[in-house]
Structures are given as structure tokens and as C-alpha cells.
Amino acid sequence: MRTLLNVIWLVLSGVWLFLAYALAALIMFVLIITIPWGIAAWRIGVYSLWPFGKTVVDKPTAGVFSLLGNIVWVVLAGWWLAIGHIISAVGLAITIIGIPFAIANIKMVPVALLPLGKQIVDLP
Image 1 (cartoon, rainbow, N blue to C red):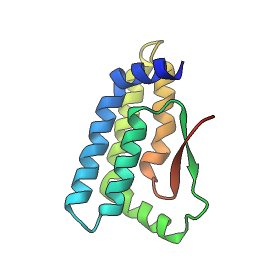
Image 2 (spheres, rainbow, N blue to C red; image 1 turned 135 degrees about the vertical axis):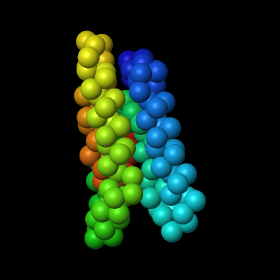
Image 3 (spheres, one colour; image 1 turned 30 degrees about the horizontal axis):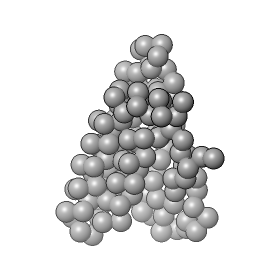
């Protein structure tokens, strides 16, 4: 079932969200000082490409630097990636089939806004 959901997700919004995260990662890598944010953008982009069967959990080692890094992230890229998830969710919620995918998009908004201090793990 996860594979079917992931394939439908990929077609409806996964590719576009992945491309947005990949663009954010590319910009962060080019600016050199923002490479840690680029790594986070790429990690979440891969998660947004194939999200079912995975979940986001807090890292136990996250601290003050994650908080400060998240503030920088929100200013640089987090807000427009979160808006992308919201726009995608609204578009998917119009159809009955898209409602579960819209809910999945809304669940991804917090990690789009505050990615540092989080890790993506596989569900059992």
C-alpha cells in the first residue's frame, strides 16, 4: 500500500516539491557558508519525493545551534517551501482522492519550516 501511495504522491506533488527542495539545496551549496542548510534541504527533498513509510522525529542531540539554524533557514528558504506545501495541499484537497495527500502535505509544513534538529526514519 505504501508503494501505491508513494507512486500517486510522486505524480501529484512529489516531483514538484522535490524540485523546489533541490533548488533550495543548490542555492545553499553555491553560497558555501550555507552548506549545512543545503544538506537539510536535500534530505527533506528526498523525503518529500517518497514520504509514505517514513516519519520525522526529533534528534535527541539537537540543541541551541539547531534553533539558531532554523531561524536562518526560515528566513532563507523555509517560508517559501512551506507555502509550496500549503499550495499543493489546497490543490490536492479539491478532489476526494487527493485529500489524504493534502493531509500529508500539511504534515510536512513543520519540517519544511524547521528542518534542523529533525531526522527522517523508516516506519516499521
